[in-house]
Amino acid sequence: MSVAERRRSPPVPGEPTPSTTVLIVAGNELVAARVEAMLRSQTGLRVSVSAPGELARRLEDHAAAIVVLALESAETARLLEVLRGMPKVDGVLLLASDPSGAWTAQARRSGVRAVLRSDATAEELATAIAAARAGLLVLHPDALKPSTEARAARSGIGPTALTAREQEILEMIAEGMSNRIIANRLGISSQTVKFHVASILAKLGAGSRTEAVTFGLRQGLIAL
Image (cartoon, rainbow, N blue to C red; front, side):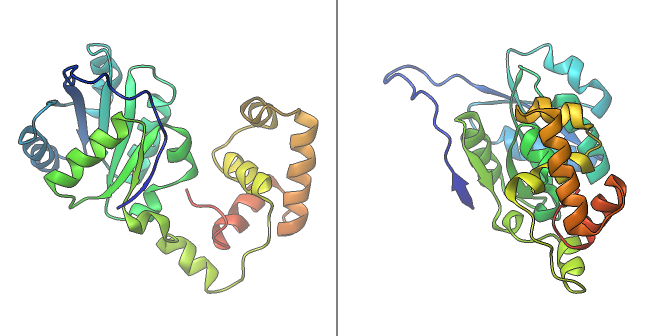
């Protein structure tokens, strides 16, 4: 795994390490049972399983928790929106068959702190949870590779050069954000956002925001 560090205050020497609450949300009972069994074998973890629709309510029963999502991409995206900014979430860990497809712009902005393969071992899960709780980012190496969709798009046409800011805004457009929301998120004016959007449309040869997103997906500039 590759690990990018984000520091928090170190624990006080001699102070007992508090147990970590982990809530598992999986697409089926077998997957949930497998992950639960692996995590229960690890010390220092309080583990329980939640249905997708009950997750927000279950979080209210805990001071803070690490959430493990083992779901299809569409359901994962929906729950990430639910979890975005919730103060009782210490971090989100995604289990995915395609880590590169799971490490999206939405994931990066929604508190995802770890992306592992679906067949991750108990040790890998425990290590990722501990790292996420400490404020670290843990990614399976595959998460840093272009997704299957992006590689297919690049095979037909070379990507258009966008600035880092333009790519960030294109990702936000793909998530359905308006210029006003983008401006608020980035701390810039709506007029500046309009300027960037116009530049994105011109570079991609798109006639609308929807076309820009479509072209961006085809060229592997963004992934949903």
